[in-house]
Amino acid sequence: MDSPLMVRLLLIVHVNNRRLPDERADLFDKAINALLQVDYGREEGDIRELSTDWKPFRDMAQHLAFHMHGQGRDQGREIEERELKAALGQEADFEPRIDAFLQSARQRGSVLEERTGVYRFIHLALQEFLAARYLREVTMGAGGHPAIVKRLEDRLDDPWWRKPILLLSGYLGANAARSAREFLAALARAGETPDARIAAAELASIAALEWRESGEALKAECAARIIALLGDASALSGCRASQRARVGELVARLGDPRFDPARFHLPGDDLLGFVPIPADPEFRIGTRQSDGQRVAQIIGYGVPVHEFNDAPTPTPAFYIARYPVTVAQFRAFLAATRTEPRDPTALRDPDSRPVRYIEWREAMAYCRWLHQTLAGASVLAGSEAALLVRGGSWQVSLPSELEWEVAARGGRRDSVYPWGDTPDANSANYADSRILDTSAVGCFPANGFRLYDMIGNVWEWTRSPWMPDYSQVNDPRREDLDAGGDQALVVRGGSWSNVRDFARCAYRYRNFPVDRFVNLGFRVVLRSAPVSSAPLSVPLDSEL
Image (cartoon, rainbow, N blue to C red; front, side, top):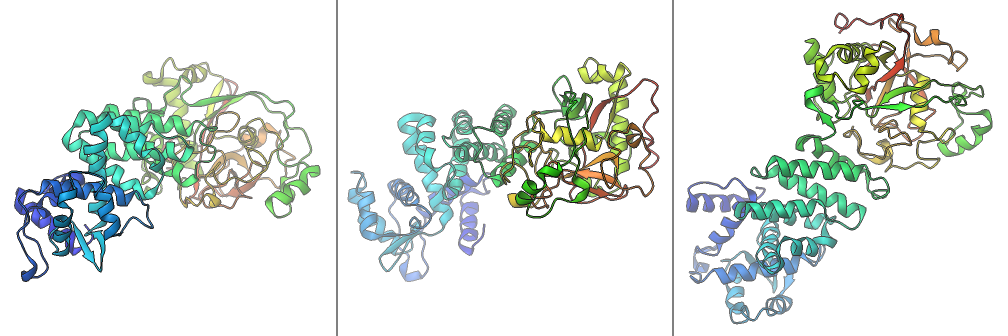
């Protein structure tokens, strides 16, 4: 509560009820009832006993609150007396009581106050709750929860209506649990525009999390709705980046349906989140010399020399993770190996965000552990990914620079970004998106290979030592080098903190193995490897 008045209301409710309600909506309901039943005034001479018939005043207040809130943020905070009387006069039952209702406001004995002929609620929170109460008592009474959802349809993505909708959910939950669940399920599916759809799912999810009795089934339904919306690129093409990040943050709290806690928080599909990438005999990494001018116009400066490449760079088939490694996945690895992260900050983000503050050796140790787990863990037996590893010819590793770029382009060989040549702050989490932090994986549209967050969110380690050009990109010995010591390694993809010219398919940068940053993470691949090939050069435990 953020004012002396609200503190006073808390005391009134506590005295009247011997305890404070757990839910905000219940608290406001009891506070309004108390205000309309007790003597209340700023000065002793102004205090007069209110009518014992206070319930009609409550009905009038909620009618007025809904009318005022419907005027919008700019016009909905105050109302002149003539308009107030006209609004209340719409109901025949209110007509004979309007003067008494206004008199109580003038004497500071109501939920309203009057100043020079202009009326307002004594606190905006009371107006918001009463608007919500109107929806429950009047609108729902006339047509059930579908009537409420229909009435809110054009207000779902209006921040002015955010609190009334949440308070409505709380009020329903305190008075009719089954009806509240039905309303929240309907709210989660509401919305006609992209912004309204994702705002409705967000509101339903927040309400389900705030209401203690909402139940796991409703939370799961809300989480599934968010994931479905985030995966519908055509429906949410105009959805703002900030909204995507907000709802993505809720998924981990609701229970992320994409990941299986019983299988080390890997994705729940048969390939455990690995996506097959076909061989491409005609692929060419980097930027063509002939494309240099076109790309320079898009990014705003000349293409760096180390990006240019005109030689063909055919790639074999491989598998790559649909998402960067998440906090939950990395925590499962640490628990299984009984190790600690080099930087404890790596575990502070929500479970569904990409893990960060990770050194190269930690990333490689995760790869070694995941390989051994796929090869031997009974809980993963039978999955297609485990069968590939157990067959002896596939190995978990970090992607090579070449593999990473093949995957990032998603089949669009010459486009600057996975989605085309035009920067788009709603297509990836980079600086222009104004999220200013990591976001839950999968909040932005997938590329042509159905891979998420290849661009933006966090930089991603590769297993490729840095080279000043692509002359050795097809030499397998480059990728088999032990990149320990001081050898710099290629990182790719840009991050939430980088400008758009860094967050593109061909941009390459380098970090040293000991580097760990606020914007540096990784993803993994399954690559073909001969049965006799040497094991990964980084020990599982000793260097963590």
